[in-house]
Length: 329
Ligand code: SAM
Ligand code: SF4
Image (cartoon, rainbow, N blue to C red):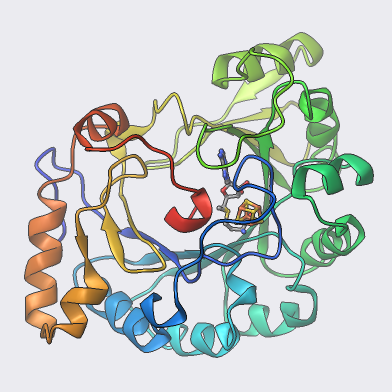
């Protein structure tokens, strides 16, 4: 079988696919209050196109897919798409990233489809603060989803973007959630992308700052072994059931064993979160590409993957300014 391997020997096995650029939240660090300029519906990849892309990539060794956005659940027929994707037996895991507002009614269906893992984004445990960050009044719904997911068969990870001076006082509270529950909380370095953010100080909470803060509170922290291609550095407080991790999204210390590619909602193929996009799969498909054409294009493109996110950022023609909602977080 042909495989997707870059010139540094990294094998690509993980696709992050943004199923939409639309969202029902307006998180301060992700987009402005009025939202981003969403594209015409016809410019979004159709589910049929996405299904085909995933099938072809799975024939090249991709066995893990994360569906993200925008908010995946705002796209009509998303559940039907998931159902069809679940038939692909080359996929070992189908994961989702969601803000949790629209998941509630679908949890048992998600379990029966074998969805492996859901990353639920929740940046504050304080209702007013949560609503201020997201610019929507949905804390109660999201918290209920969190509890229901904890009681489900699906592995739950919480995504917490660390926003300097806004939710840094809650880092310890989030870790306390792991005391009695087998829960993984992951703190994400805030990236200065599309949204202006809520930062009240210039101090940036990078991986080291977050870890020092946690270590000044908990004296007995265990570093968990690094799982190959993991996006986070993981730890646990000794005696606690769950774990916590830090995603060095901005300081980019995890690029050496990256196994990921991304496809945006409009079909832009990205070898790295920080590159400007390599080619448009949607246009290639709509231009009549066969499965073999697609395979050859994917193999060639992955061969161009750059060493790390800094090199990728330096090589792009414009500054990184797009929303994570467009890129697919
Ligand atoms: N709407 C879904 C959600 O929020 O979970 C999925 C898409 S969202 C773009 C995916 C992840 O990216 C979320 O956990 C979000 O917090 C994170 N994200 C968005 N903008 C970010 C930024 N500027 N810095 C760091 N993380 C960001
Ligand atoms: Fe929407 Fe997710 Fe961006 Fe928040 S982070 S605005 S929920 S896409």
